[in-house]
Length: 302
Image (cartoon, rainbow, N blue to C red; front, side):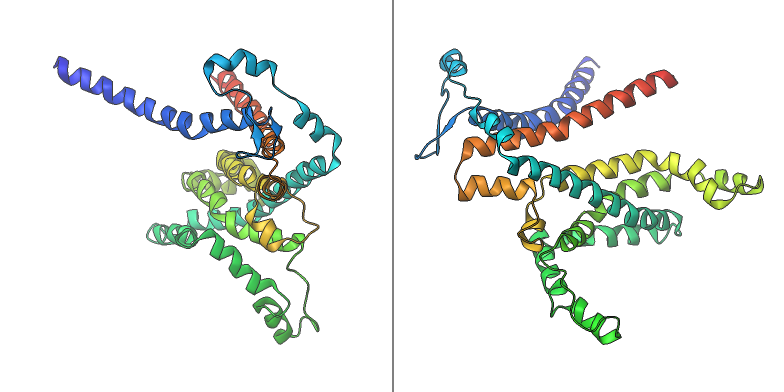
């Protein structure tokens, strides 16, 4: 009996330890390395920066050698500020568009017959079976002037000359909505699938219009799925690089593209690391504030 209890105790500890060990190994340690590089100076060497400290014994000396020049430069060059602002605007608009498209899809899936729902879920995740890069490249063939979309619109007579969609922000929004739609649909479906339809029937019997019943019943109950889906879309879109690089034009300014240019074209690793640290803070701080507000709201409701 005692051995069985010890095994169960170890099993519970492993369930807790493994996720934390994974986060420590693949998130915290790499972030600390990037954070350290952000305080170093650029150099024509391999690696292309001057190490601040290499051993724990050099920690105190290394801290004294920390340079804030990279962070000061970010505040002086308007390019990075505009890149951050542009990325946040594109991320907010894209998240709203994905929610606008994804909510009706998730609601239809949740209200579909039970026998159809597994098939509908599989259709939503089916694009993940193909490489993300190939799917983005496919949109180049669809959106270019001689692409399928323009050919179809010309054939229907809706337009008389090809539209310029590729290499614009419109192409970026289309690519983001298509690529990140499953990340919005699946949390929404999970929330809406648990919705008690008898509440809507009771509201209808009491004379509540369908639109009002949606905002009073469906939307509040689906809000956890909405929040989860918005976070799953907004966070990666803010640092997106592939879609704006392939579908956007020279006027499409996003921090992920700027970050890649600094790392691989300019080989300025310290400045790139500072850009990455600021980007992470921009994304993490609102999430922490939101979680604290949610925790306080739950404590007040108890």
